[in-house]
Length: 210
Length: 210
DNA sequence: TGTACATCAGTGAACGCGCGTTCACTGATGTAC
DNA sequence: TGTACATCAGTGAACGCGCGTTCACTGATGTAC
Image 1: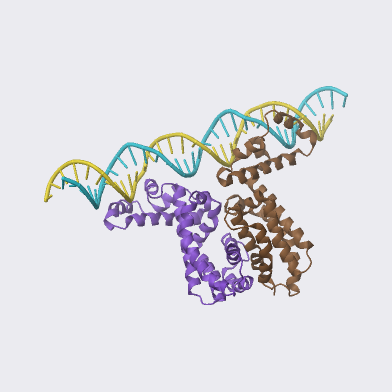
Image 2 (image 1 turned 45 degrees about the vertical axis):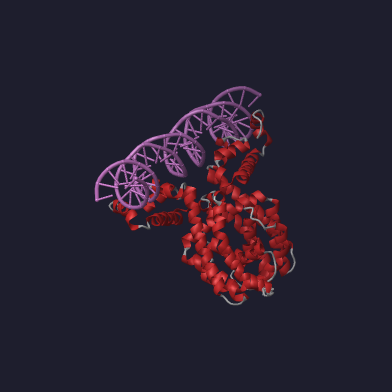
Protein backbone atom coordinates (compact mmCIF):
# COMPACT_ATOMS: atom_id res chain seq x y z
CA UNK A 1 0.00 0.00 0.00
CA UNK A 2 1.38 3.45 -0.91
CA UNK A 3 2.08 5.72 2.03
CA UNK A 4 -0.39 8.56 2.60
CA UNK A 5 2.27 11.17 1.94
CA UNK A 6 2.88 10.13 -1.69
CA UNK A 7 -0.75 10.58 -2.65
CA UNK A 8 -0.85 14.43 -2.75
CA UNK A 9 2.46 14.48 -4.62
CA UNK A 10 1.22 12.19 -7.32
CA UNK A 11 -1.99 14.12 -7.59
CA UNK A 12 -0.19 17.44 -8.00
CA UNK A 13 2.17 16.16 -10.67
CA UNK A 14 -0.44 14.39 -12.82
CA UNK A 15 -0.88 16.86 -15.64
CA UNK A 16 2.77 17.99 -15.63
CA UNK A 17 4.06 14.55 -16.64
CA UNK A 18 1.77 14.37 -19.63
CA UNK A 19 1.24 10.59 -19.71
CA UNK A 20 -0.80 10.49 -16.53
CA UNK A 21 -4.12 9.52 -17.97
CA UNK A 22 -2.62 6.29 -19.19
CA UNK A 23 -0.63 5.80 -16.05
CA UNK A 24 -3.63 6.07 -13.73
CA UNK A 25 -5.60 3.62 -15.86
CA UNK A 26 -2.71 1.16 -15.79
CA UNK A 27 -2.27 1.55 -12.04
CA UNK A 28 -5.93 0.75 -11.51
CA UNK A 29 -5.81 -2.26 -13.82
CA UNK A 30 -2.66 -3.51 -12.09
CA UNK A 31 -4.35 -3.12 -8.72
CA UNK A 32 -7.49 -4.91 -9.92
CA UNK A 33 -5.43 -7.86 -11.15
CA UNK A 34 -3.50 -7.99 -7.87
CA UNK A 35 -6.73 -8.02 -5.88
CA UNK A 36 -8.18 -10.73 -8.08
CA UNK A 37 -5.07 -12.88 -7.78
CA UNK A 38 -5.16 -12.61 -3.99
CA UNK A 39 -8.91 -12.84 -3.35
CA UNK A 40 -10.56 -14.31 -6.45
CA UNK A 41 -14.08 -13.07 -7.12
CA UNK A 42 -14.94 -13.23 -3.40
CA UNK A 43 -12.93 -10.11 -2.56
CA UNK A 44 -12.82 -8.50 -5.99
CA UNK A 45 -14.66 -5.20 -5.34
CA UNK A 46 -14.30 -1.53 -6.29
CA UNK A 47 -13.36 -0.64 -2.75
CA UNK A 48 -10.63 -3.30 -2.66
CA UNK A 49 -9.22 -2.08 -5.98
CA UNK A 50 -9.24 1.51 -4.74
CA UNK A 51 -7.49 0.55 -1.50
CA UNK A 52 -4.90 -1.52 -3.39
CA UNK A 53 -4.13 1.19 -5.96
CA UNK A 54 -4.10 4.22 -3.64
CA UNK A 55 -6.18 6.01 -6.29
CA UNK A 56 -9.54 7.47 -5.43
CA UNK A 57 -12.90 5.87 -6.10
CA UNK A 58 -14.03 8.91 -8.08
CA UNK A 59 -11.00 8.63 -10.31
CA UNK A 60 -11.76 4.99 -11.03
CA UNK A 61 -15.25 5.98 -12.14
CA UNK A 62 -13.86 8.87 -14.13
CA UNK A 63 -11.72 6.49 -16.19
CA UNK A 64 -13.82 3.35 -16.41
CA UNK A 65 -17.41 4.42 -15.81
CA UNK A 66 -18.26 1.37 -13.74
CA UNK A 67 -16.76 -1.65 -12.04
CA UNK A 68 -17.84 -3.79 -14.98
CA UNK A 69 -16.10 -1.33 -17.29
CA UNK A 70 -12.86 -1.75 -15.37
CA UNK A 71 -13.24 -5.54 -15.42
CA UNK A 72 -13.85 -5.56 -19.14
CA UNK A 73 -10.79 -3.38 -19.73
CA UNK A 74 -8.71 -5.70 -17.55
CA UNK A 75 -9.95 -8.73 -19.44
CA UNK A 76 -9.13 -7.04 -22.74
CA UNK A 77 -5.62 -6.23 -21.60
CA UNK A 78 -4.94 -9.74 -20.28
CA UNK A 79 -6.38 -11.42 -23.34
CA UNK A 80 -4.45 -9.17 -25.71
CA UNK A 81 -1.20 -10.10 -23.99
CA UNK A 82 -1.90 -13.81 -24.21
CA UNK A 83 -3.02 -13.73 -27.82
CA UNK A 84 -0.06 -11.60 -28.85
CA UNK A 85 2.40 -13.95 -27.19
CA UNK A 86 0.81 -16.89 -29.01
CA UNK A 87 0.56 -15.03 -32.33
CA UNK A 88 4.22 -13.97 -32.15
CA UNK A 89 5.29 -17.56 -31.54
CA UNK A 90 3.03 -18.94 -34.28
CA UNK A 91 4.29 -16.44 -36.85
CA UNK A 92 7.92 -17.15 -36.02
CA UNK A 93 7.54 -20.92 -36.51
CA UNK A 94 8.31 -22.64 -39.83
CA UNK A 95 6.44 -25.76 -40.82
CA UNK A 96 3.08 -27.20 -39.78
CA UNK A 97 4.32 -29.16 -36.79
CA UNK A 98 6.43 -26.24 -35.56
CA UNK A 99 3.43 -23.89 -35.68
CA UNK A 100 1.32 -26.24 -33.56
CA UNK A 101 4.12 -26.82 -31.07
CA UNK A 102 4.77 -23.08 -30.86
CA UNK A 103 1.12 -22.30 -30.11
CA UNK A 104 0.92 -24.87 -27.31
CA UNK A 105 4.26 -23.94 -25.73
CA UNK A 106 3.76 -20.18 -25.92
CA UNK A 107 0.33 -20.49 -24.29
CA UNK A 108 1.72 -22.53 -21.41
CA UNK A 109 4.73 -20.20 -21.10
CA UNK A 110 2.38 -17.23 -20.81
CA UNK A 111 0.41 -18.95 -18.07
CA UNK A 112 3.58 -19.66 -16.10
CA UNK A 113 4.90 -16.12 -16.65
CA UNK A 114 1.68 -14.19 -16.05
CA UNK A 115 -0.19 -16.36 -13.61
CA UNK A 116 -2.58 -13.65 -12.45
CA UNK A 117 -3.54 -12.63 -15.98
CA UNK A 118 -4.17 -16.28 -16.86
CA UNK A 119 -6.37 -16.62 -13.78
CA UNK A 120 -8.45 -13.66 -14.76
CA UNK A 121 -8.81 -14.79 -18.37
CA UNK A 122 -9.99 -18.25 -17.38
CA UNK A 123 -12.33 -17.10 -14.61
CA UNK A 124 -13.93 -14.19 -16.47
CA UNK A 125 -16.33 -16.09 -18.77
CA UNK A 126 -18.68 -16.87 -15.88
CA UNK A 127 -18.88 -13.21 -14.82
CA UNK A 128 -21.46 -10.73 -16.10
CA UNK A 129 -19.16 -8.02 -17.44
CA UNK A 130 -18.09 -10.07 -20.44
CA UNK A 131 -21.46 -10.29 -22.10
CA UNK A 132 -22.23 -6.64 -21.36
CA UNK A 133 -19.07 -5.47 -23.11
CA UNK A 134 -19.04 -8.34 -25.59
CA UNK A 135 -18.70 -6.33 -28.79
CA UNK A 136 -15.82 -4.17 -27.53
CA UNK A 137 -13.98 -7.25 -26.29
CA UNK A 138 -14.61 -9.20 -29.49
CA UNK A 139 -13.22 -6.28 -31.49
CA UNK A 140 -10.06 -6.34 -29.42
CA UNK A 141 -9.62 -10.09 -29.74
CA UNK A 142 -10.44 -10.50 -33.44
CA UNK A 143 -7.22 -9.16 -35.05
CA UNK A 144 -5.01 -11.22 -32.72
CA UNK A 145 -7.04 -14.37 -33.32
CA UNK A 146 -6.80 -13.72 -37.04
CA UNK A 147 -2.99 -13.55 -36.83
CA UNK A 148 -2.98 -17.01 -35.26
CA UNK A 149 -5.48 -18.39 -37.75
CA UNK A 150 -3.41 -16.97 -40.59
CA UNK A 151 -0.33 -18.79 -39.31
CA UNK A 152 -2.18 -22.11 -39.26
CA UNK A 153 -4.23 -21.80 -42.47
CA UNK A 154 -1.46 -22.35 -45.05
CA UNK A 155 -0.71 -25.72 -43.52
CA UNK A 156 -4.34 -26.72 -43.76
CA UNK A 157 -4.32 -25.70 -47.42
CA UNK A 158 -1.11 -27.61 -48.06
CA UNK A 159 -2.69 -30.73 -46.57
CA UNK A 160 -0.31 -31.02 -43.61
CA UNK A 161 -3.07 -30.22 -41.09
CA UNK A 162 -6.51 -31.81 -41.25
CA UNK A 163 -9.25 -29.79 -42.95
CA UNK A 164 -12.10 -29.27 -40.52
CA UNK A 165 -14.19 -26.32 -39.30
CA UNK A 166 -11.81 -23.75 -37.83
CA UNK A 167 -13.61 -23.55 -34.46
CA UNK A 168 -13.22 -27.30 -33.95
CA UNK A 169 -9.57 -27.19 -34.98
CA UNK A 170 -9.11 -24.43 -32.43
CA UNK A 171 -10.72 -26.61 -29.76
CA UNK A 172 -8.29 -29.46 -30.45
CA UNK A 173 -5.38 -27.05 -30.11
CA UNK A 174 -6.53 -24.94 -27.22
CA UNK A 175 -8.76 -27.38 -25.33
CA UNK A 176 -6.10 -29.52 -23.63
CA UNK A 177 -3.94 -26.46 -22.95
CA UNK A 178 -6.79 -24.45 -21.45
CA UNK A 179 -7.84 -27.41 -19.30
CA UNK A 180 -4.31 -27.97 -18.00
CA UNK A 181 -4.18 -24.27 -17.22
CA UNK A 182 -7.44 -24.31 -15.31
CA UNK A 183 -6.39 -27.28 -13.22
CA UNK A 184 -2.96 -25.84 -12.53
CA UNK A 185 -4.44 -22.50 -11.52
CA UNK A 186 -6.89 -24.28 -9.23
CA UNK A 187 -3.94 -25.99 -7.56
CA UNK A 188 -4.92 -29.50 -8.65
CA UNK A 189 -2.36 -32.13 -7.67
CA UNK A 190 -0.41 -33.92 -10.38
CA UNK A 191 -0.49 -31.04 -12.86
CA UNK A 192 2.91 -29.66 -13.85
CA UNK A 193 3.25 -26.99 -16.52
CA UNK A 194 6.75 -28.02 -17.58
CA UNK A 195 5.67 -31.61 -17.97
CA UNK A 196 2.67 -30.45 -19.99
CA UNK A 197 4.91 -28.32 -22.21
CA UNK A 198 7.06 -31.39 -22.85
CA UNK A 199 4.38 -34.00 -23.47
CA UNK A 200 1.34 -32.19 -24.87
CA UNK A 201 2.68 -30.61 -28.09
CA UNK A 202 3.49 -33.93 -29.76
CA UNK A 203 0.09 -35.35 -28.77
CA UNK A 204 -1.82 -32.32 -29.94
CA UNK A 205 0.12 -32.35 -33.19
CA UNK A 206 -1.01 -35.95 -33.75
CA UNK A 207 -4.62 -34.90 -33.22
CA UNK A 208 -4.53 -32.25 -35.96
CA UNK A 209 -2.13 -33.56 -38.58
CA UNK A 210 -3.76 -34.91 -41.72
CA UNK B 1 -44.60 -20.67 -9.79
CA UNK B 2 -46.88 -22.72 -7.50
CA UNK B 3 -50.12 -21.07 -6.52
CA UNK B 4 -50.46 -19.86 -2.93
CA UNK B 5 -53.18 -22.36 -2.21
CA UNK B 6 -51.06 -25.46 -2.85
CA UNK B 7 -48.46 -24.44 -0.30
CA UNK B 8 -50.43 -25.29 2.87
CA UNK B 9 -51.52 -28.60 1.33
CA UNK B 10 -48.00 -29.64 0.59
CA UNK B 11 -46.87 -28.52 3.98
CA UNK B 12 -49.55 -30.54 5.73
CA UNK B 13 -48.82 -33.71 3.82
CA UNK B 14 -45.05 -33.63 4.20
CA UNK B 15 -44.54 -36.17 6.94
CA UNK B 16 -47.39 -38.43 5.78
CA UNK B 17 -45.70 -39.23 2.48
CA UNK B 18 -42.47 -40.25 4.16
CA UNK B 19 -40.07 -39.23 1.38
CA UNK B 20 -40.59 -35.52 1.86
CA UNK B 21 -37.18 -34.65 3.14
CA UNK B 22 -35.67 -35.82 -0.09
CA UNK B 23 -38.41 -34.24 -2.15
CA UNK B 24 -37.97 -30.77 -0.67
CA UNK B 25 -34.22 -30.92 -1.19
CA UNK B 26 -34.70 -31.97 -4.79
CA UNK B 27 -37.28 -29.25 -5.40
CA UNK B 28 -34.86 -26.64 -4.10
CA UNK B 29 -31.99 -27.98 -6.20
CA UNK B 30 -34.24 -28.06 -9.28
CA UNK B 31 -35.27 -24.48 -8.62
CA UNK B 32 -31.67 -23.36 -8.11
CA UNK B 33 -30.65 -24.90 -11.42
CA UNK B 34 -33.60 -23.28 -13.20
CA UNK B 35 -32.69 -19.88 -11.78
CA UNK B 36 -29.07 -20.33 -12.77
CA UNK B 37 -29.97 -21.37 -16.30
CA UNK B 38 -32.18 -18.30 -16.71
CA UNK B 39 -30.08 -15.67 -14.92
CA UNK B 40 -26.51 -16.99 -14.64
CA UNK B 41 -24.66 -15.84 -11.55
CA UNK B 42 -26.10 -12.33 -11.86
CA UNK B 43 -29.54 -13.39 -10.61
CA UNK B 44 -28.59 -16.54 -8.76
CA UNK B 45 -29.60 -15.65 -5.18
CA UNK B 46 -31.31 -17.35 -2.23
CA UNK B 47 -34.37 -15.19 -2.68
CA UNK B 48 -34.65 -16.09 -6.35
CA UNK B 49 -34.36 -19.80 -5.55
CA UNK B 50 -37.00 -19.50 -2.86
CA UNK B 51 -39.37 -17.64 -5.20
CA UNK B 52 -38.77 -20.20 -7.97
CA UNK B 53 -39.32 -23.22 -5.75
CA UNK B 54 -42.28 -21.99 -3.72
CA UNK B 55 -40.51 -23.34 -0.64
CA UNK B 56 -39.70 -21.07 2.25
CA UNK B 57 -36.37 -19.46 2.96
CA UNK B 58 -36.21 -21.03 6.40
CA UNK B 59 -36.71 -24.47 4.88
CA UNK B 60 -33.83 -23.90 2.50
CA UNK B 61 -31.60 -23.07 5.45
CA UNK B 62 -32.94 -26.03 7.37
CA UNK B 63 -31.81 -28.41 4.62
CA UNK B 64 -28.66 -26.80 3.27
CA UNK B 65 -27.35 -24.55 6.04
CA UNK B 66 -26.31 -21.80 3.67
CA UNK B 67 -26.52 -20.64 0.09
CA UNK B 68 -23.03 -22.01 -0.51
CA UNK B 69 -24.19 -25.32 0.91
CA UNK B 70 -27.03 -25.46 -1.58
CA UNK B 71 -24.69 -24.53 -4.44
CA UNK B 72 -22.21 -27.21 -3.44
CA UNK B 73 -24.99 -29.81 -3.28
CA UNK B 74 -26.21 -28.72 -6.71
CA UNK B 75 -22.72 -28.97 -8.13
CA UNK B 76 -22.32 -32.42 -6.64
CA UNK B 77 -25.59 -33.60 -8.14
CA UNK B 78 -24.81 -32.20 -11.61
CA UNK B 79 -21.28 -33.56 -11.62
CA UNK B 80 -22.39 -36.99 -10.45
CA UNK B 81 -24.86 -37.20 -13.32
CA UNK B 82 -22.26 -36.22 -15.89
CA UNK B 83 -19.59 -38.57 -14.57
CA UNK B 84 -22.02 -41.46 -14.30
CA UNK B 85 -23.20 -41.00 -17.87
CA UNK B 86 -19.58 -41.02 -19.05
CA UNK B 87 -18.60 -43.95 -16.81
CA UNK B 88 -21.56 -46.03 -18.03
CA UNK B 89 -20.58 -45.40 -21.64
CA UNK B 90 -16.90 -46.10 -21.02
CA UNK B 91 -17.61 -49.39 -19.24
CA UNK B 92 -19.94 -50.56 -21.99
CA UNK B 93 -17.36 -50.00 -24.74
CA UNK B 94 -15.05 -52.76 -25.96
CA UNK B 95 -11.61 -51.92 -27.26
CA UNK B 96 -9.32 -48.94 -26.75
CA UNK B 97 -10.67 -46.81 -29.56
CA UNK B 98 -14.28 -47.55 -28.59
CA UNK B 99 -13.65 -46.46 -25.00
CA UNK B 100 -12.21 -43.11 -26.11
CA UNK B 101 -15.03 -42.51 -28.57
CA UNK B 102 -17.61 -43.45 -25.94
CA UNK B 103 -16.19 -41.00 -23.42
CA UNK B 104 -16.21 -38.10 -25.87
CA UNK B 105 -19.67 -38.85 -27.27
CA UNK B 106 -21.33 -39.46 -23.91
CA UNK B 107 -19.91 -36.19 -22.53
CA UNK B 108 -21.28 -34.22 -25.48
CA UNK B 109 -24.60 -36.09 -25.33
CA UNK B 110 -24.93 -35.16 -21.67
CA UNK B 111 -24.30 -31.49 -22.44
CA UNK B 112 -26.98 -31.50 -25.13
CA UNK B 113 -29.43 -33.39 -22.92
CA UNK B 114 -28.84 -31.52 -19.65
CA UNK B 115 -27.84 -28.08 -20.80
CA UNK B 116 -28.50 -26.37 -17.47
CA UNK B 117 -26.49 -28.92 -15.49
CA UNK B 118 -23.61 -28.55 -17.94
CA UNK B 119 -23.77 -24.76 -17.54
CA UNK B 120 -23.55 -25.02 -13.78
CA UNK B 121 -20.69 -27.51 -13.87
CA UNK B 122 -18.61 -25.37 -16.18
CA UNK B 123 -19.33 -22.07 -14.44
CA UNK B 124 -18.91 -23.28 -10.87
CA UNK B 125 -15.09 -23.45 -10.66
CA UNK B 126 -14.81 -19.65 -10.49
CA UNK B 127 -17.30 -19.41 -7.60
CA UNK B 128 -16.34 -19.52 -3.94
CA UNK B 129 -18.51 -22.41 -2.78
CA UNK B 130 -16.38 -25.05 -4.49
CA UNK B 131 -13.21 -24.47 -2.49
CA UNK B 132 -15.17 -24.20 0.75
CA UNK B 133 -16.81 -27.58 0.25
CA UNK B 134 -13.85 -29.03 -1.64
CA UNK B 135 -13.40 -32.22 0.36
CA UNK B 136 -17.08 -33.21 0.27
CA UNK B 137 -17.21 -32.61 -3.47
CA UNK B 138 -13.96 -34.45 -4.12
CA UNK B 139 -15.32 -37.43 -2.18
CA UNK B 140 -18.41 -37.48 -4.37
CA UNK B 141 -16.43 -37.24 -7.59
CA UNK B 142 -13.64 -39.69 -6.81
CA UNK B 143 -15.47 -43.04 -7.23
CA UNK B 144 -17.00 -41.95 -10.55
CA UNK B 145 -13.68 -40.69 -11.86
CA UNK B 146 -12.13 -43.97 -10.81
CA UNK B 147 -14.70 -45.93 -12.83
CA UNK B 148 -13.68 -43.97 -15.92
CA UNK B 149 -9.96 -44.33 -15.20
CA UNK B 150 -10.46 -48.07 -14.70
CA UNK B 151 -12.08 -48.37 -18.12
CA UNK B 152 -9.14 -46.64 -19.79
CA UNK B 153 -6.25 -48.17 -17.82
CA UNK B 154 -6.24 -51.70 -19.35
CA UNK B 155 -5.71 -50.19 -22.77
CA UNK B 156 -2.76 -48.18 -21.51
CA UNK B 157 -1.29 -51.38 -20.05
CA UNK B 158 -1.89 -53.27 -23.29
CA UNK B 159 -0.02 -50.57 -25.19
CA UNK B 160 -2.98 -49.40 -27.28
CA UNK B 161 -3.11 -46.02 -25.55
CA UNK B 162 -0.01 -43.93 -24.88
CA UNK B 163 1.54 -44.21 -21.42
CA UNK B 164 1.67 -40.77 -19.85
CA UNK B 165 0.68 -39.23 -16.51
CA UNK B 166 -3.05 -39.85 -16.00
CA UNK B 167 -3.92 -36.16 -15.45
CA UNK B 168 -2.38 -35.22 -18.81
CA UNK B 169 -4.13 -38.08 -20.56
CA UNK B 170 -7.36 -36.82 -19.02
CA UNK B 171 -6.64 -33.33 -20.38
CA UNK B 172 -6.21 -34.66 -23.91
CA UNK B 173 -9.53 -36.47 -23.64
CA UNK B 174 -11.59 -33.90 -21.81
CA UNK B 175 -9.91 -30.66 -22.88
CA UNK B 176 -11.34 -30.32 -26.39
CA UNK B 177 -14.74 -31.56 -25.23
CA UNK B 178 -14.90 -29.18 -22.29
CA UNK B 179 -13.82 -26.27 -24.48
CA UNK B 180 -16.44 -27.05 -27.13
CA UNK B 181 -19.00 -27.23 -24.35
CA UNK B 182 -18.00 -23.87 -22.89
CA UNK B 183 -18.20 -22.16 -26.27
CA UNK B 184 -21.49 -23.78 -27.14
CA UNK B 185 -22.99 -22.81 -23.78
CA UNK B 186 -21.77 -19.25 -24.27
CA UNK B 187 -23.59 -19.20 -27.60
CA UNK B 188 -20.44 -18.83 -29.69
CA UNK B 189 -21.14 -18.94 -33.44
CA UNK B 190 -19.86 -21.85 -35.49
CA UNK B 191 -20.00 -24.38 -32.66
CA UNK B 192 -22.32 -27.31 -33.26
CA UNK B 193 -22.52 -30.20 -30.81
CA UNK B 194 -23.52 -32.79 -33.40
CA UNK B 195 -20.67 -31.78 -35.64
CA UNK B 196 -18.31 -32.00 -32.68
CA UNK B 197 -19.65 -35.46 -31.81
CA UNK B 198 -18.94 -36.55 -35.39
CA UNK B 199 -15.49 -35.05 -35.90
CA UNK B 200 -13.82 -34.88 -32.48
CA UNK B 201 -13.73 -38.55 -31.38
CA UNK B 202 -11.47 -39.69 -34.22
CA UNK B 203 -9.13 -36.73 -33.66
CA UNK B 204 -8.96 -37.23 -29.92
CA UNK B 205 -8.34 -40.93 -30.45
CA UNK B 206 -5.35 -40.05 -32.65
CA UNK B 207 -3.96 -37.85 -29.89
CA UNK B 208 -3.95 -40.63 -27.30
CA UNK B 209 -3.28 -43.84 -29.22
CA UNK B 210 0.23 -45.20 -28.84
C1' DT C 1 -55.04 -45.88 26.01
C1' DG C 2 -53.96 -41.12 27.15
C1' DT C 3 -50.66 -37.55 28.26
C1' DA C 4 -46.29 -35.08 27.99
C1' DC C 5 -42.43 -34.21 25.68
C1' DA C 6 -38.91 -34.35 21.84
C1' DT C 7 -37.92 -34.02 17.19
C1' DC C 8 -38.15 -32.30 12.78
C1' DA C 9 -39.80 -29.82 8.44
C1' DG C 10 -41.33 -25.73 7.39
C1' DT C 11 -42.46 -20.43 7.69
C1' DG C 12 -41.39 -15.47 6.59
C1' DA C 13 -40.53 -10.89 8.65
C1' DA C 14 -36.61 -8.52 9.96
C1' DC C 15 -31.72 -7.36 10.11
C1' DG C 16 -27.24 -5.65 9.06
C1' DC C 17 -23.47 -5.56 6.11
C1' DG C 18 -21.10 -4.56 1.98
C1' DC C 19 -21.55 -3.61 -2.45
C1' DG C 20 -21.58 -0.40 -6.73
C1' DT C 21 -22.62 4.11 -7.58
C1' DT C 22 -23.39 9.19 -7.12
C1' DC C 23 -22.19 13.86 -6.59
C1' DA C 24 -20.54 18.26 -5.16
C1' DC C 25 -16.25 19.47 -4.84
C1' DT C 26 -10.77 20.96 -5.65
C1' DG C 27 -7.06 22.31 -8.34
C1' DA C 28 -4.10 22.20 -12.45
C1' DT C 29 -3.82 23.13 -17.21
C1' DG C 30 -5.44 24.76 -21.83
C1' DT C 31 -7.79 28.35 -24.61
C1' DA C 32 -9.99 32.96 -26.13
C1' DC C 33 -9.70 37.62 -26.49
C1' DT D 1 0.48 40.15 -21.16
C1' DG D 2 -3.46 39.56 -18.08
C1' DT D 3 -8.09 37.96 -17.22
C1' DA D 4 -12.02 34.85 -17.61
C1' DC D 5 -13.66 30.64 -18.66
C1' DA D 6 -13.63 25.62 -20.06
C1' DT D 7 -11.86 21.22 -19.52
C1' DC D 8 -10.23 17.41 -17.24
C1' DA D 9 -8.11 14.29 -13.56
C1' DG D 10 -8.83 13.45 -9.21
C1' DT D 11 -11.22 13.27 -4.34
C1' DG D 12 -14.00 10.79 -0.72
C1' DA D 13 -18.21 11.09 2.13
C1' DA D 14 -22.68 9.51 1.62
C1' DC D 15 -26.43 6.71 -0.22
C1' DG D 16 -29.56 3.05 -1.14
C1' DC D 17 -30.33 -1.43 -2.62
C1' DG D 18 -30.03 -6.28 -2.40
C1' DC D 19 -27.81 -9.82 -0.57
C1' DG D 20 -27.17 -13.91 2.81
C1' DT D 21 -28.53 -14.93 7.22
C1' DT D 22 -31.12 -15.14 11.66
C1' DC D 23 -34.71 -16.34 14.68
C1' DA D 24 -38.97 -16.95 17.07
C1' DC D 25 -42.47 -19.32 15.60
C1' DT D 26 -46.22 -23.31 13.91
C1' DG D 27 -47.75 -27.81 13.41
C1' DA D 28 -47.24 -32.76 12.42
C1' DT D 29 -45.26 -36.93 13.86
C1' DG D 30 -42.55 -40.11 16.89
C1' DT D 31 -41.49 -41.80 21.59
C1' DA D 32 -41.80 -42.74 26.80
C1' DC D 33 -44.32 -44.14 30.49
